[in-house]
Image (tube, rainbow, N blue to C red):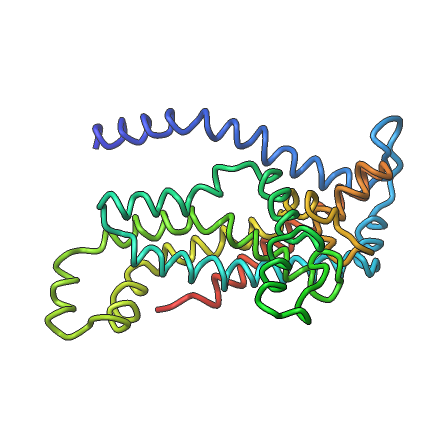
Length: 289
């Protein structure tokens, strides 16, 4: 008992610095932001108490709901794009040969690049005059498909989903590979004897054994998608005409472009509430006995 108590004390002392940093740089700013959401404040001077006025204004603003809709598109694209692709790649690349390590490094490489670099690169890929997408379509004879991918409000949100999916496959692939490598070899051998090979192995063995890891990946997808900012800001800036506006860009524009810090704080608090609601809903949907 004494040894267990000393071990718990040692773990607590080891975690204490990280917990203090998390408290100071994450929890305190969240509470502070929620507090200023009740005020009209321009960053300097006295703050005027408004009650729930900032929150009700945001919920009545059609641009806010448009930004939420665009965020949900990215959430769906991330969950149904990044997770399946990463899972398939992890099943193919889980071995430790030099070829598999090379391909894993190549898939993970976009995560190392700065988001600004990725946004600029994909901006050129989608460029209506010099972009490679329209060039390939032109050479393939698909002239009717050529368009301004980032300037057309009907398709630009779906266009920006491609770089978001591409840039974030790597971490989930590594996460799934680690989970697959932890599956007991006895379970694998028993599954082969029972004829669970191919897609049966995936459905009956792999997915159930790494289900908790998949749930964690989906939580990361949801939280990451709702705070998406840099790629969209670099590629479109939320335009044209707010057609690619996200909750983060909506908050940023109101906070730093027109200096409505109180309103921006209210929007950021709503983003946290929406994120927590979606995460909780996803966990309830994926809950299994």
